[in-house]
Image (cartoon, rainbow, N blue to C red):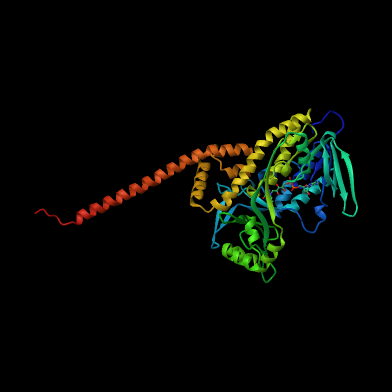
Length: 479
Ligand SMILES: Cc1cc2nc3c(=O)[nH]c(=O)nc-3n(C[C@H](O)[C@H](O)[C@H](O)COP(=O)(O)OP(=O)(O)OC[C@H]3O[C@@H](n4cnc5c(N)ncnc54)[C@H](O)[C@@H]3O)c2cc1C
């Protein structure tokens, strides 16, 4: 396969910093393009850890992520999906524990491209690392934290060892890919050598994870305590809880609330009263003991949104994944978008085979609008998930959108479908959705006019029947 080189000749060396899902995937793609890859990861090898100490335990994998896994041609998509649980829609829980399902696929079809998949984040990462380890072009370097980077020299300052015996060394590579997450060291270095526009915002909401354990019957058989084929949502207007299924038949719940609301719950009694009042069905399923233990033990996570530009410096380095665009998790796209970055980067490297610098220019130019679009959509979706999903207006709009999609699929495609089940560029999906709004507006007007017309006709007919009957029954005064 072709390789974008600084100059023709021997394969170049690339450092990928961060062996999260995006970095591990990038290492594979680069190795397959013929680069010699060193994959630096600050943490120890997660495959040897008992418990995964990362961010959320499970996450939703959708079309963009699946296709990026497939792009390795190593069957990784099949392997990962074999261990995934398909979520075909949202299950909305109301105050009284009543549930209503809202399908993701508007045609009611059940295919991989119309549902999202709950995957174990740790297992997915392990699969990618296993594949990377097998590739002869990749060297995995766990416990190697990049503490500094000198882009002009392609140099990384790397720290290894434990607190007792730390060592630091400097190493050079032809090219550096920063996939080191939201608090990226590589992005910080990029800021110093480019005129980077940078924007970050913490939202007032934080998150904490809780567990609904599997049901176990007298014979020891395990089963899910709720429908496993849905993403469960408890919308509460200004906050919410969601739950995703796990393959061990448990659910991981994530409670999203403003930090002050978390801080205000200080005692077990307050916590129990809050859950009994706001999430009565979830309270029964989690159980008092487990709730109190997990709530006061599990860390409170912050949610940050980061946008920046450019993503690269000359032909020296580029940032991808959360390092380039961190988003709030409400569209379930952070990792999917990061994996798509890897595919787009590969596409640019192949398109501009003779100039890495041109390839990276093109990458930033193409990807930035999309990253901004999905960061904004993710922010918007939080309002939709916690405040709109219950509303009759929202449901009516969704229903009309679904009907229009059936009738004229080339004109109207629901935004969620474009984002989660296609590879339409995020920025294009946003624009199309705004344009489609017009059709939905017109269709809503027509539907309203028809409904009013029918209601008016029905009333008129019934009144005229009533008058006729009345006239027939009335005594005549004529002699
Ligand atoms: C609550 C929550 C739910 C989410 N749900 C979803 C979802 O459903 N679907 C979805 O697509 N996304 C979801 N996301 C987003 C997703 O987690 C991220 O987008 C994804 O993890 C980004 O992957 P990454 O590899 O770019 O970064 P990370 O996963 O953050 O990995 C970065 C890696 O770099 C390493 N590293 C950091 N600094 C250094 C350094 N200096 N030197 C060496 N190594 C370093 C870290 O140890 C880490 O292993 C969710 C996020 C949260 C918080």
